[in-house]
Length: 206
Picture 1 (cartoon, one colour):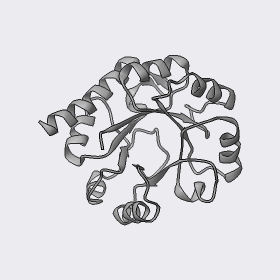
Picture 2 (cartoon, rainbow, N blue to C red):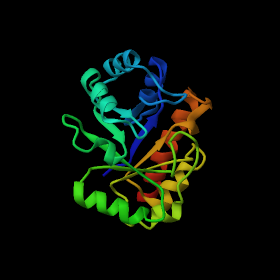
Picture 3 (tube, one colour):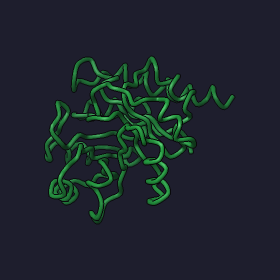
């Protein structure tokens, strides 16, 4: 599986265009309270305008069922990202489950991967995403095979190559690490992030 790169917290057509130009595989639109939150009308517009090859992800933090179902019914996102318990039993969606860092991180990821046979699982810091805080990378590494794991938290264009080289994950996800200020994406940082992540994979193969 090639490295999957997601740029999260996009809020405008310019952000989407910058993600496409950077060569990202996916974009995340935050649908729960955050400086990066977008409303349903904006989400519909951005998802409709995204090219088919760009995966669109609805991003939630511990949402209630009614919110997830409302978004599902109004915006054709490709994936819904949230904690597994928040997505359980909701029909008609493809999910990107989130495991937050904890002392039993390795067993939680292995258990979810085995029970649900997910293509990808996102691992991030203990709290809300988009804060720039990292999980304990030693605990992430202890998961073992990370080919289905997307790592997030504290990644930037300057450290993503090291993280990819050290952990060999299935994907990387960034939000605050490619911003000029909270919620304001920088196309140059977005491009640098994707390039650094891809270069790390190429160098690891060579």
